[in-house]
Length: 244
Ligand code: PGA
Image 1 (cartoon, rainbow, N blue to C red):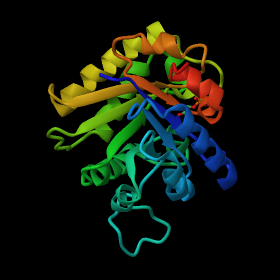
Image 2 (image 1 turned 90 degrees about the vertical axis):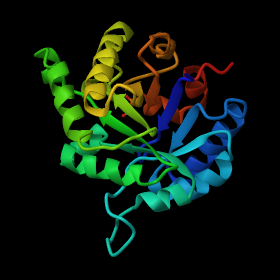
Image 3 (image 1 turned 90 degrees about the horizontal axis):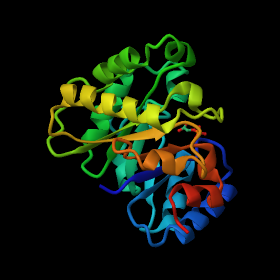
């Protein structure tokens, strides 16, 4: 299985800077079709898509759970698919911190799965205090049970991004050997909920950079990376994706 590298640009860039970065992605990743995903701000998706072409996949950073209709301010899954998104991040800890619950994320996941062209990237991960108290496994198990409840996946692929909250944007990445243990655990727990045959990938996220990326990518159960800050710097992101 090809490892997946996802750049989460968050809401960091202006439109002008998003387009410049998209041009650089298109140029650098021309030959790596399919394994790199760019997730710009929602308002930049359409413009960025035109520049990325087919070499880099397009992802959104969130979706509303309701279908197209009278829902002011919402973004619906069908429209994301129509504008060319193939991935949607949901449940990022920065959104959970604003009050988004696992029950809401579950509804968003179901909305994504109604669109055949969309693959969800569901974020989970524990806080520093839970990590210190050695409760990471118990906590992510609850998140898995709540966010993945009641799905009928069939052959659809599902992606979980394991992002310890304390590692996000802090420069304090979880060491790869420990991340590997968590990933193997997450796969086992997710398959208990979804079924053993589920097409599941688990990505690591949290302070990934050009110097530590390969330590994660060498691990058996780390199927790729969700990258924040370092995805904004093309040279760093190129190193992460191991393009020379
Ligand atoms: P970071 O962010 O790489 O800047 O730590 C990761 C994320 O939030 O997805």
